[in-house]
Image (cartoon, rainbow, N blue to C red; front, top):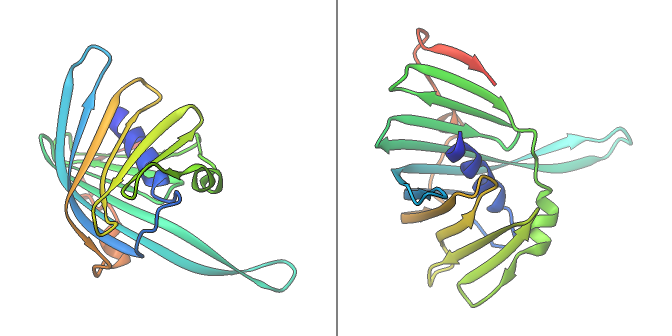
Length: 188
């Protein structure tokens, strides 16, 4: 559950004062170090897409709303898929043959995080929100390169992105977690 919380916080962070494309795909390496210095390393691929929707207001007007969708596909050391829209989190654990669904109830005020993100250099940013400090690095093309932070469980989290591909073709159905019907379902 520790890395799911980390992924959720990361997905919210991407809405900070850093310009990101409507879509991206990338490989990632995630390192989580606990307070006893035990290190867990994960590898996989991330798909991201902002979906813009127009909603009618009770006053008869329209309001644009953006949903950020993520799919993390872990390939090592375990086979998992983690999908989120910022409200719900679905985890498909292929090794355990189970699917877990969670409602994310420790929400972060995205607007506040965006306001708090400050550039440190031309490629590095810092945002502090709810006592968590995030350090974000961009490459020379202003593409996301690395995120480092200490999560609410005191784990040191470092996510490094490789082969970043901005504005890639990402279909909404690719961002869904799918599992065989025989997998156990766990509601969180």
